[in-house]
Image (cartoon, rainbow, N blue to C red; front, side, top):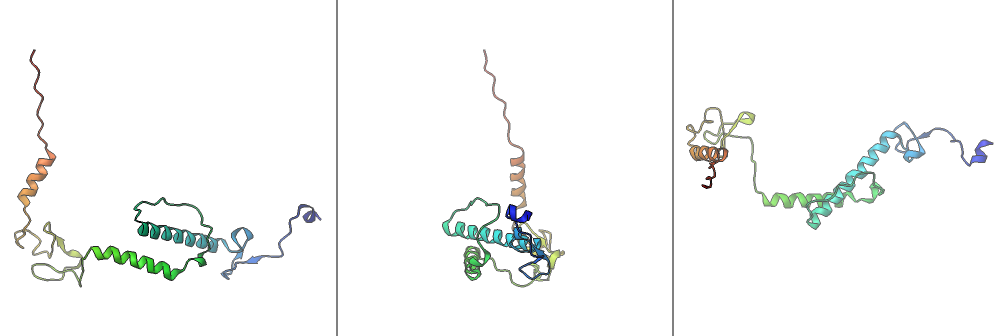
Length: 167
């Protein structure tokens, strides 16, 4: 009788998650268990961030405010094929400006020996093995003397005292 007075109804029984994961859901989480509801919210936020990044790429806005919180749009309303096509076009356009092709394993520029992760990067921008890592072993075109002079000049600026006004 108390239920009739307040207008509340007692649940018929435990409600299983609508994703059929085996756990119990609740009306507060749209008849999903807490894990499935949390995954749904995360997917909605990712879709919103992806949509805003696509809009910023299309409109040319470099800075978009990040929106926090849950999104009220269902996940099924966003077409995943269109989203992947837009993301693919954006990544292809950014790669088109930079043409740096990595082919095969890392090799020494002097002897073409495979170096893998143990290669040494020189200041001239090339990769060398342990035998050719020093500048005198691979005829390095980088000018170390000028670079050192510039570094010293930058670190130690010339300081001149102001002359005193004579009375």
